[in-house]
Length: 571
Image (cartoon, rainbow, N blue to C red; front, side):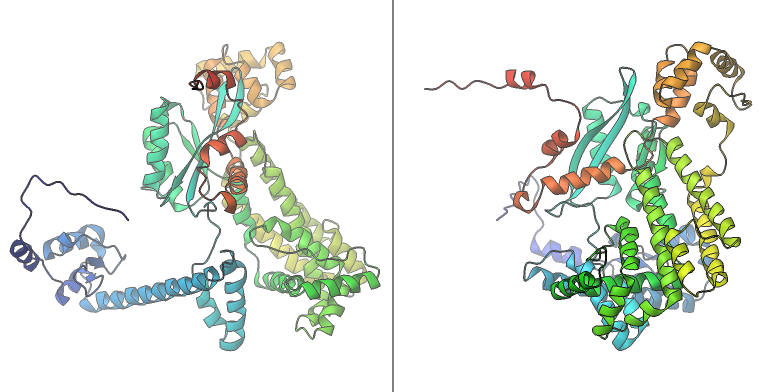
């Protein structure tokens, strides 16, 4: 039980004085809607709320003058709107509140049903909600099923086994003539707001006497707490580190660029996953399917399970399903599944083969973007290579050449599906994907001259954007045969570090481009380690020290630690 002790050196208000103050509290009046304001509730703790953006103000703002100031400063174009306009906005706001309140209530109901028997929390996302959507879609229609998407049951968050949000920070720096990456710290947060995250980061930096001005980059995903324009963590860091440039994780951007699918292919994907789950979610069905595969002499006897969390599994899941398509058709037919006709539909199977191929290639791309010691240059090259491949595949499709997609090519050679129909569908999808990648990676369209010299200072590219002194230094470097040999022998980052003493300004400019992280790969591996260390058997563990030892390549100074321990002689 918590206790609160109050020490007061001033006289506390009497009951009569409290009532007097309470009586002076201003109440909401319906005429305040003319200023675009309603109230949050009918209770005594109600506060004014703007019907335009839903912003809630303090109780002291419940004055016509303050509400008018809010309207004129933040919604200047709406001052002349009639009362009917604000009444309509009020109804829209109430409708949104009602939907969100129902969604939150439903979320708590699902959580209660999961927690009561002690089941894993991710059942809400992986079982309850998908099952409810499909059931409601059959019984009440798709529009009703779409409403269930508002229920917040997702477990895809950066929390540990104890439900705490964890901030993991890595650092990349130059030390003793080479670039190093290391785990900086881990800190739990009750609410992962940008203010709390920055306070934690800033406190660590100042406590360890690190200079913010030396920070040249910060990399994160695109969540609002990180990248909010006015109050995000990146904005707060850039206020104290003016040279820091934000980089959106290229792995995250690649996943977003590849996520969108046209309706016909999404339907094939959804039906394929349902067919797999029909067999894999039942132990009996899994055993019977294995027996069927053995009797038919199949190379494999099991399908692979699909999970949205492990989205990289899609290529392997679809490839295995395509390989065992005949066995799956027979099994689903015996079970009277409505999905069985799909495995007799040659066009559907052709699209399945294409999806298996394209997701396998996307998996290869994603894997290529992972790893340590990556830079914006190396990952940009991989993305640019992928975009050009999309154009190449589309060109070959126009010539009825499907060899870029082996599973599809083999299937078409054995089927009666007209290639012309698939050529148009797949070609449009490849064109759309190319545009999506260009939208997410606009920096890949052209490499500016001021960055091309970083890749290779020994080219004859004109450096018109640089001061004359730096261009002359670059010419001196380019004509030095000894440095040219060093450039061939060393990695790009190591080369620029090695010439820092002789060409300091050029080296600094190059390292500001090469040093920043290009992806959050290290953080993702760090979270995997965190979940491994802080499991259900160690839920109370303060994980930072253990995680630091697990992730950091730096060896602890054991002798120094031992010397600091006080000996305890026996009595």
